[in-house]
Length: 288
Image 1 (cartoon, rainbow, N blue to C red):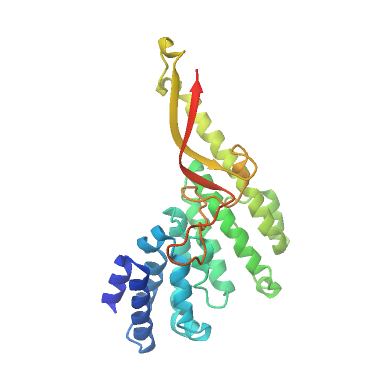
Image 2: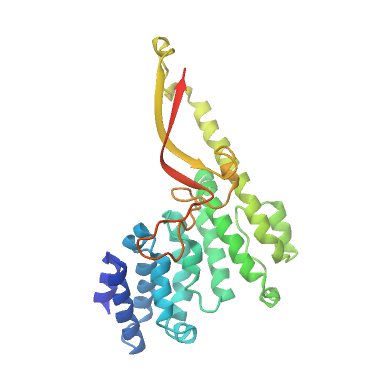
């Protein structure tokens, strides 16, 4: 089992990965792999660099779940998913992986509430270890993910009869009140609305750092005041305007709450236009 797992981590094409998926499923069905190896299978599949680079992770998952029924998946991999999913979701954020959290959640055995709540607790444990600015940056993506998780959990009121929604250090008063009153259906919108305040706080923190150390900034010479400077830098575009684009929830990498850039496209297909994305290079001319 170790050999196909190792090959899966290093595989460089979708057809090769599909062949390795077949081998892993064959070994799992014949009880030749342990839970630890099944956990590695999940990790190496979802974070395979070639799949990420080609935007083919959804296609690999489509192939996986075309080769195994939901019932058999739960039987063979349910325990591995329960143990590995919280770690995968934290690594997704902490390492700024360019894969959609919706793809990772496809591993879930029948949308297990226990597994989703474990993810929520893992997010809080991770964020509590971060200082202000990193907490805000990674908290934006986590807020977006938590909105989707609570959408799932809100469909089953029985989940909360003996449980309370776990706290998170990025929660504001409105979110804390909704959790205390177990108004789960209100949490998705509340977490989406939390993204902009976190972004604003991060901006204020970084502006304060700059203001406290003005001598560290390079000063322009007076002789250069009349010159025209050509600047190349990343630019985020939105459907409303470039300035308003932070209000949108679906940016592409390298934004801290990265979402999928293409879903279930055929190999070699051109990605569809996005409402909000980063251009590789944006040029601006400044007359000073």
